[in-house]
Length: 48
Image (cartoon, rainbow, N blue to C red):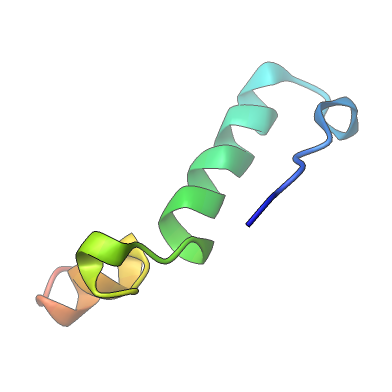
């Protein structure tokens, strides 16, 4: 899977980093978490 974040689309470095973090936590399934995203896995365990 290849994702191009298009760095020129962001006004600040902080916006760019926040987009990467959001993608990692909400969109990218993980093999180690049984193909769930980190947020899905934590929700399943009872965390908010």
